[in-house]
Length: 213
Image 1 (tube, rainbow, N blue to C red):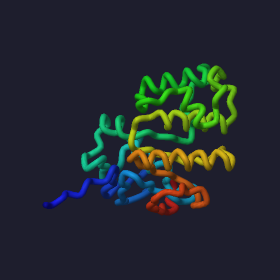
Image 2: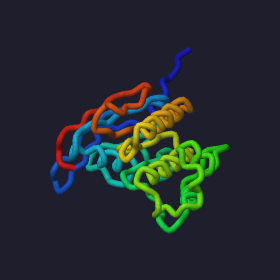
Image 3: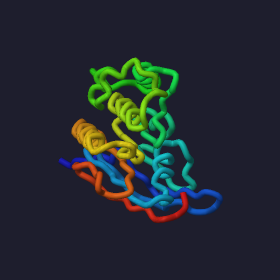
Image 4: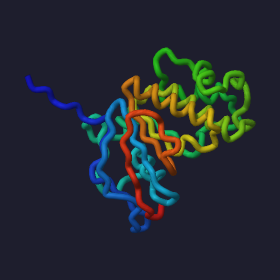
C-alpha cells in the first residue's frame, strides 16, 4: 500500500521581496514540518523581519508564494493557521493585561482548555491581571505578548526576535513554549541574530544575506 507524504505545514516557493526595486531577500525556497522549528538567522538589515511579515500576509511578495499544508495561503487560511509575534507587543495601553488578552482571544480565537489567567501564570505574569498595559516594562509586555501566543490555536508561530527584552529566565520560557508547541504538532519560525538562544528542538536553519531591509 502506497502512502502519500503529508505536505509541510508551511512552504515557501520562490519567495522574493524588493523595496524600491532593491532586493530585500529571495528567491527563497524552504519548508517547515509539524513538530519542528525553522531558525532564521542574519544580521541587521538582512530581511528577517520582512520575511516574517510576508509569511504572515502583512506584506505582499514580489515573486513566489506561500503554502500551508499544500494549499496556497489565502488570507483566510493564514488567519487560522498563523500567529505572529512582532517587535511590538500589540497591546492597548489603556486596557488591563487581562482585558488585552480577552480582546485578542475574541479576535483570534483561543486554544481549547486554556484561559487568559492560566496563560499569564505560564509566562510568569500572575498577579498582573488588573495592571494597565502602559505601566508594564518592556520585558513584562513581551511576556504578555507571549501569553497571547500561548493562547492562540494557530499551529504555526512566527516569532520575530522573541528573546529580545528578556532575561535568561525569559529566554528559557520562550524555549519551553516552543518545545510545547512542537510537541502538540505545531511548528515555529524564529528569527534571531545568533544561535545562542536557539530552542532545543528539531530545527532547520535559514541564513539570510545582508540586503537592506
